[in-house]
Length: 477
Image (cartoon, rainbow, N blue to C red):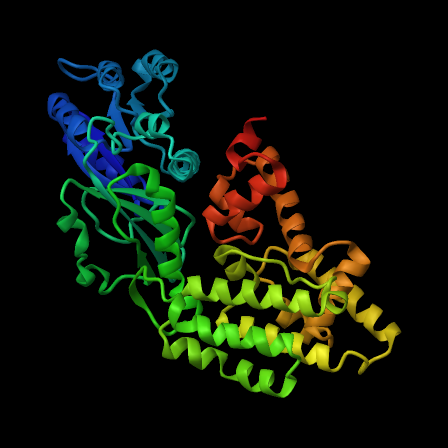
């Protein structure tokens, strides 16, 4: 949540400000209330609140002086000033100093909701922009930019150890609400349901244990934790490891908890290699039986998302090498883990698609419906996608809804639209995102959700791939 302190020399005024707004509903939390500006300033220096609501005229130190002192200390808290009618000129001066807004005493309750909404939008945009910059610096291992953006990366501390933790929650969190209490950590929101923590300590032992009891009673769907490194240049690798570990729920949605990154490729590689041999030798009967055991084999070996990625790319490579002409127009490209999670609802769905590819190859010359029917069904499907791109869309569900084989659908997209199903949906979403970024004040995170992409981190990657720049930079162009 965004932390707020209230500063006013009159206790009744503090109570009025506290009660006038529904702080919690909009993601704010009152962290302190002060009648002494000196004590308020000490709190600001020690605790770095996000928002300071302050009176203008107070004994000894005015609200304007408090703003000046806070800025001189290098603190980036935002201010909202309170004034009576007689001090309206001071309020105007406060705006020139950089205050977000002001309101008059006594507070007009009818205007309170408008103000708190405005503040919530501002902080969502501010946090989203900061998160985007930090994430970009983390992935590029830009030490100078990291130390500029956050004191967490102190260039003087060269002997620290790092570990990444990613949490997925079951439902959307409001106003940057924290989902896990971690000390000595940098928190980065990667969407309304996904949070990254960079853990740091001078002692490796401090990062080896994690209190699982902290997950009890929370909305955590899955947590993934990386290996440990003593170099900031490994941060991108650690983030990927933690995301792969948390993605364990892709294989089994009922399995929840904290998953530690662990490579288990050796346990499933022989099984995957056997699939490759069977495909190459066109042993379709054996392949059908092997594909049927795929999910159970992965479960038995406690495989993770890294092994799923290897499975997909290995099988796709062999399929294209063996049946290129038959499959060249299908959506059988090499994918990373985030792309697989975006395309398939779960591991069972992925296995089902590969199985359908097998059936398609076996029944290549058999069609259940006429070409005219196929064209009509496909046109209906495309129209549905155009109107529902902001929702979760899986080719398996759509092909069933419009009476088409999902593997044949891949060919239809390439043949009729010149792009794959995923490319078509992504283009719709990014085009709409560009429009929203240019013509609305929605935060980048809100834009991602609006166009149907729940993962803020993934949205940034896809947007940059499509447009050449990040969403935040696009908005400034």
